[in-house]
Amino acid sequence: MAGVHFIDDAERFAHRAWESLKLEPPVDVSKVAKRLGIELYKEEFVPEVDGLYLLIPGAPPVVAVNCSYLKPPGRQRFTTAHEIAHHLLGQRIKSPARIFFIDSVKTSKTLLERACDRFAALLLMPEDLVRKWFEELSANPENRIAIMSERFGVSPWAMRVRLRELGLPYRSWDRGKIIR
Image (tube, rainbow, N blue to C red; front, side, top):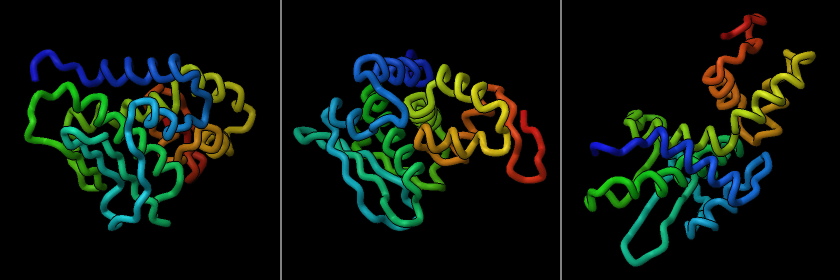
């Protein structure tokens, strides 16, 4: 896999999606999937499976996301974006042996998995808007994560991870501790 730069590609693909589709938060992930010719399904799976990406030669690519009540809408949206990344980044792998990817809570974080997470974060929570809204909500640190999560359509957990990635300090929900 020499010469493959998944992390850089994740950023480039997310940026292209925002520009070409004129996206607004919360990002319509079904619009992104449709533009790429991906058939999107919501199915109830066992709790360990968040979603899957399937590509069979001669058939349209498929993304299926676990719509169980155990998977909140924000998590489903992140999973959808992550699986779309498998479609975009998986094309960089020249091995015909892998036609599907199943993501679960126990999936190891390979370079490809980390790149798919990065694409999902960049697609759903672009840095410029995260920084802008973070600053706008500076007078309301207790509710900042909840408000931003709602605006971006992601889980509070995903929002906290994104803030940490960007080095933005936030008040933790427990003990009022500032996280940097």
